[in-house]
Length: 257
Ligand code: SAM
Image 1 (tube, protein in one colour):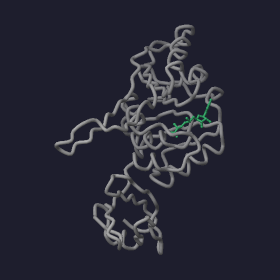
Image 2: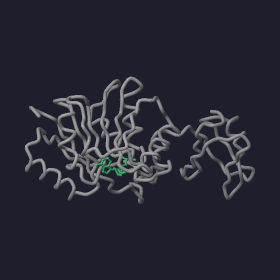
Image 3: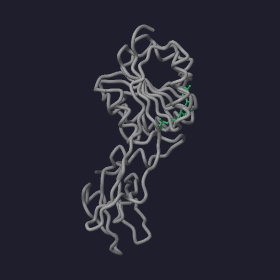
Image 4: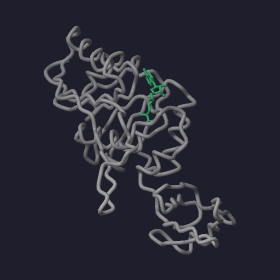
């Protein structure tokens, strides 16, 4: 861990603070400060305390930590859902994935990690400010040069046929891009949609019923993480939970175009 790296400090209540280590910098808390130099010297995994005795642990942020704390223009795909989208798309290193919209780059980071340096993510976004944020968030955290940024409307894109191993859509109206992306998805591969509202799921499935697009609706699911407070004799679900984030719809391309 050195200057320029991200650091995450966790307080005794489990609250976390993400920042970049700078020469001469300090982390200021209401019960004392910690110099970045002391944090660099202690290193990740160490315990440290402010002069007033407030304890922290020092960590390298995980991808989840980073996506939850990074600056945003659009709401990022929640990490539990982004990880599940990688699983629903059955991604492996070296694959080619198409994504829209880039938003703040949360899902892009997960897709880029799943396909690795030998793969490629093609990320479409209509709003320049959003794509600039996504690019910055990626390059600030983990950048293997495996993302191609396209400032364009995916519904208007002319894509090469059978080029992508997966398509991930975090859009209000994903059905508007299906005509453009379907021929570009390889047969027997997956398209996943992240949809906060059930009305969007219904609209998507009705669109598929009304249009002759070659998809199997594999499943619609929610990813529920129920955290527990386990400090015997206390052991019950935490009173505050992340409630609903979104529905995930998994489609599989079949047949001809
Ligand atoms: N998944 C992103 C993340 O993790 O940060 C967030 C995506 S945000 C909810 C949706 C984005 O899609 C917005 O930035 C919006 O501008 C963009 N968008 C909407 N329609 C689009 C289209 N047809 N083509 C490309 N981008 C589009």
